[in-house]
Image (cartoon, rainbow, N blue to C red; front, side, top):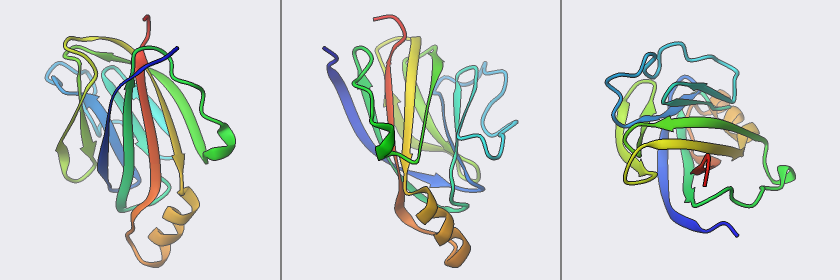
Length: 155
């Protein structure tokens, strides 16, 4: 049975529909955030980097991050507007959160004491509300909610 190792909450600054997760030791990444960000792709990957496309243009997304010791229970797709999974390589075992305009935030997610290969599942709800707020008022806070789950690619 999968065991939840750690969890944390992050308020992600979304600008231009974008925020991302990037290897904390990012000096050698071939494509650092936000280079080559692709509009409209819910979860896009580059080496050491995960890009998330938000339905809202500019707002603060509520992000719950979980680190598991193996693949966590599958989330019911009916509970989410979008879901996707991807591979993620971390050289340091830490992941930084990035926004399009502000760059790297102070939030760091510890995956492990050292680097390794990971799987990640990103689930999101509140997308229609975030899009509507962006069109009507310009910003919102915590309307779009994410659950980001990391686990070792090989337990």
